[in-house]
Amino acid sequence: MEDTSFEFLKRLLDAPGPSGFETAAARVWRAEAEAFAQGVTIDVAGNSYATLGREGGPRIMLAGHVDEIGLMVTHVDEEGFLYVDGIGGWDPQVLVGQRIRFLTRMGHVVGVVGKKPIHLIKPEEKEKAVKLSDLWVDVGARDRDGATARGIRVGDPGVVDAGLIELGDGLIASRAVDNRIGAYVVLEVLRALSTGEGGQAEVTAVATAQEEIGYHGGGARTSAYKLDPQIAIVVDLTFSTDAPGVEKKQVGEHKLGSGPVLSRGSAIHPIVFERLATLAEAEGIPYTIQGSPRMTSTDADAIYLQRAGVPTAVVSIPNRYMHSPNEVVDLADVDATIRLITAFCRSVTAEDDFIPR
Image (cartoon, rainbow, N blue to C red; front, side):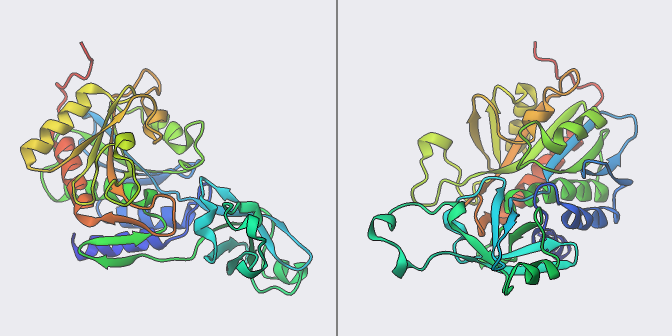
């Protein structure tokens, strides 16, 4: 990975952007895109677009969601403690003792997650899993007025206050790997296309909004309707199975360093899948396959049935510790995913037929 691209990745992962409040992260993404894309825009839903390629050529949509899971203030009590609920799917156990950065109208406010000390917990309660309702956030306010004077109010979003770290051997950890990595990959594909052979297609990278709460399709649904693509590739994360306790029989075998993961299933277009698999083999890119017999639980579920239908594939990157403050990926897998999707975009021609017969 080039130094310029890694610095972009760090800025993107460190920017706070929970679902519905993606502004800071999306701004970083668009600023980078301005350096090489032909057109960079944003829509009312918060989706960001960067386009490159031959106008009038086959339209390819590359989607990676730019939001992350977070927390939202639901109550400020008389003593100034904040109570929160999850933006997206949290395991409350990983929040205990964390620092939370709230995005308020008066700037950022940092607090710590509080919990009853172990000494005061009854023996029968010690074996029970912590619930989010058992936790609170202490921002150091003496009372409710002290909290509100610093800009805190109900509805303020927050994220775990943890930046990217390099673990060694090409592994990184970040709270926002899911799925800022996908937004990074689709833009890096555009960068690669801008510096070499572009091919015949018109490619639009989209940093989609609200995937983590996108039960009705989120920003992928609106952006796909707007673009009306002829092909779509969604980039997301999947479970790495090389950590203790992960059941390979449930999710397949996908290790860090084993390359991109190609989903195959009912929502995945068979011709697009086979094209990706064939290209991976031709390019010498290792990959694994994940069975997705029903939904993919990614932006693809909102894209593939848009308008008259969109041939859609999902390319994922193995990720340890999903939805935690320290999600871990291998940068070699990230680079391999960029290479594969770049090769796919260059391979598409106006003569390609994606109708399954």
